Image 1: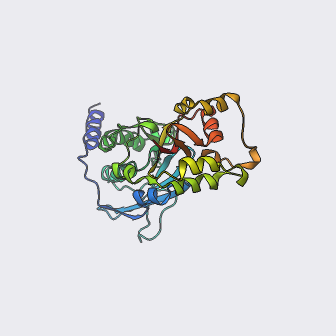
Image 2: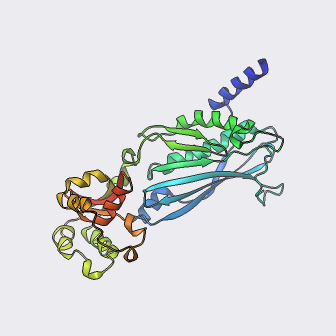
Image 3: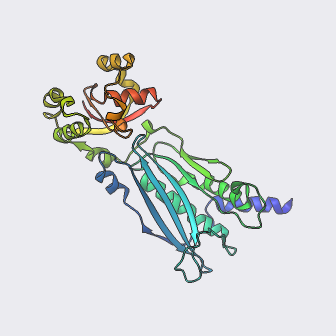
Length: 311
């Protein structure tokens, strides 16, 4: 029992970051600020950030964070995996072999620091819905689940401590434990997410850009709402692209009548699933474009959507 107590005390100690991480560097990956600016209309995309570090005993690691943007929900989902290289430092061990050579704590400290750094960088510009971290399990560990293994329990304690270093003003991140992975998620909802100020300030569009967006999404040219475009969209610049609460659209009497009627403006074959989640257009609280999209999202239980707005 004395050994167990000392072991737990050591876990608490490293959880307070007394185990110094190895020096690491990013060798691949996009800049979130540039990604946000280059994709104003939120097409679906996926990326990968790769980091590398070498331990004191010359074991080289690759930490790979794969993430995808879900335009239908306007958030990012990510997965973290890490691998070791062979002795030549040229080839990755795809079997994810565990070879810490007595360096488990600083390796954990380094991997966790990389993850926290990635979170703090990307959640300035995107809402991060979830991050999966898959722990590695030693061959001689007879635990049924990876998260219940010796290594998994250490990671669980360590992650919980280190998540205090995330710095979004919206709140803190929590970690949940499943059979084979840890799931990190924000404690706040999408509509409450605080983005970096300069993103919101620069996130404006001309009337012509919003008009082009409407025209591009309209299945048939004859259905293009020319009247609204000429009267409300084109004469006004400084449109903002932001999250709105879908239920607030029901204050628009015209849209409310449409929603309650159950009417569908387009047949299934006329639009794709992705089209139904493209940005709405709202002028002074009135929904100009996106009746079908907004109605479908509300029926599906969505709480928020992205919209070009002008007040």
